[in-house]
Image (tube, rainbow, N blue to C red; front, side, top):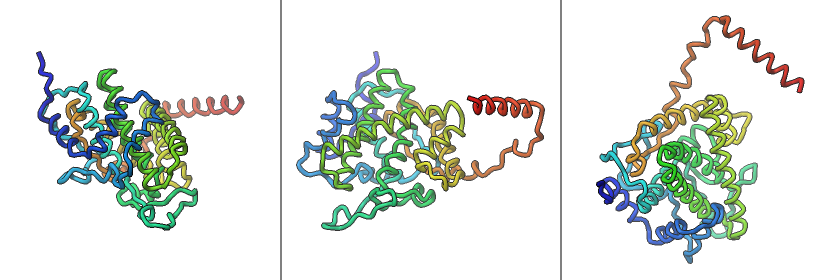
Length: 322
């Protein structure tokens, strides 16, 4: 009979999680026991008298590599299996995995902690923060709450796809814990960075974020099935905010990053995911692949290609006539 005790790798994650403040632990216990809908789960954060200024992304593990040289780096857990039904392990690992997602495009708003300081705004009226890293410096994305949320969603999506490999019951529990961690942090940032003190307003924004997350799942799933053109459109719409001036080579970098990242997670064992031994890199590593000229670009136009072109023109005419 298999032992019910967690393996050494699992215990290591639990010990790491034990270093989290007791306040955060109380929040997560409250969330795990509530039956409220997702957009209202975050009311648990107000069991504290004063909100902390620290964000999940601030709480990195000492001596931990800040960036992977590849799209996703996974390490061997040293164990062939992991107790996926262990509630404490699920909560601890999902918290660690979420921190890894959240820090990829982390931002701050120093003016939020200065009395009477005015927070700068974007042309769209969003609070403009300060952020560093590839997503802001190479892609020239603006460090705002929405940008952080969408890039965090993208990384969460990659993990969510891998968690679907678990049994139906385990997959649902792991995904829920990952999502709960996001919504907890989202409301925390609304409060400390953006000064949204009204619970009703926060709940409205959280409901909108939940709908965005559902849309992200559907859009990226469709892209994985239908091809890079559809996936690229979803990335352009969510990450680049449908900016007509966006460089499509940058969009292609993100698409390639997602494909390679999913392949790396596919090769990782359940124990590796369950013990949170995942580190994200940047899409910059995909530059050489994206800029390589397609071998079919200069290939002669054959009969099969002509038949496909005729078919596409016929379909286009039928669409126009409707």
